[in-house]
Image (tube, rainbow, N blue to C red; front, side, top):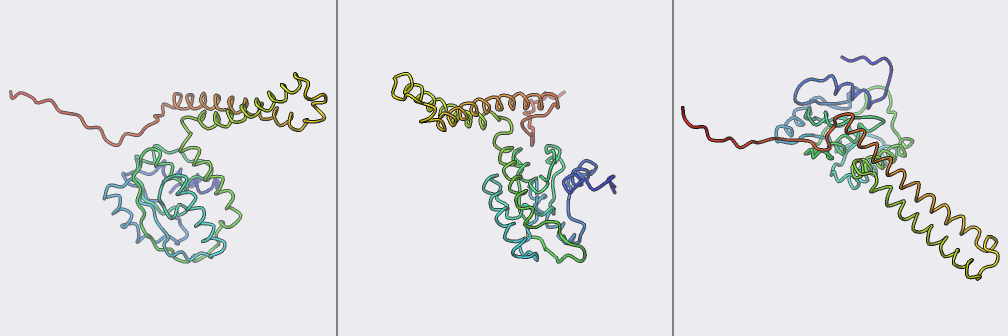
Length: 261
């Protein structure tokens, strides 16, 4: 048993358990008895089939339809589309993992519900297993409509990490290019009009357009700078931590024939 000094949140609790757990397969489940331990063999069976993650699917949920089921269905749909991981229930923590998959993942914030999406970055094979969802015997849930926006922000974070984590310049550079080109075109057109004498009072006639062009130009340069800083930070992160941008599943070597003695 691991007893933390205070309540650091669900992600931190799972991370502490993953760090201390031993064995080839790690199973996580909530302690409020809404997850039936009798379903663990079904998860392990998928691991035995060769999958890296067996994720529970609360096929028949007992939660409130308005405050839990409907927002959860929307969030799961968005997460599946953005991450490319076809799961119908990202929210449940009832999952079985191969231990080596979790070693490649660093958890922070509230990203525990998106472990399968993060693991897909390293090529993890994921399967979904129907599980029972029993009514809560005591206490109340802390999740509701108020956390929907937090989940949406996490989804955007996951999308960025999956697609641009190792190449942030591809994201910020595109935004910077659009802003720089638009700002340059606007200011260039206004400058030509001023030089050719088509407009005598440029500030009075096109003041807001000038401000917009200037903001777009500066915003584009800032996006370029952010992309370059992101590239430097990523290289510093991988090189200082000794982390790899890939994950090895298996190495096979051809054995040379050995002459008999």
